[in-house]
Image (cartoon, rainbow, N blue to C red; front, side, top):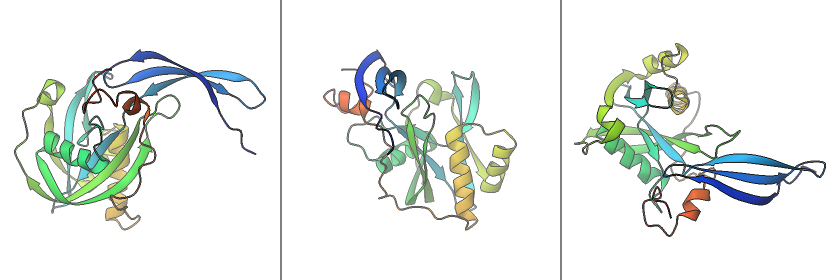
Length: 214
């Protein structure tokens, strides 16, 4: 029988707006216990928005963790209490790319760093696009730029090592596979069981903004 990895105790070490760090004590096979540090996260969404010319909308944004600008998909954190993944994707596409879409699907779900982090991301496809005015941007997003790139070229940039953001890599390759007829996309009603709950549950009484500390 597979071992049941039971958490016998848990300690919150750091609580910050977009992530937290806790230490769990977990039972191991053979009767022992081990400490595991886990980065808590609210989860996120990303969007592969493709226009009628089969071009994908890519944003370039400064990422301080790697101290460089990365080409990415429009994306954002599931930081609004009660907001669905699809509604979050629509909001982020509007805020980051100034786009709306009438056709949506699910391309891929992924866990970004399962060795130590809860973060899980649902990547959507968006088609039948229309341009709308973006809201005023702040912080790094004020430096963000938008580029339309042929889907085949975006895929080539992945294999050339020019697009390295893991979510963008997964989304672009999945969208290319769907476009080639090699894979289907899922309906937006498909359950997202990987969506993290630790932070959202702990901050459920703090209002609609889940980045607000209790």
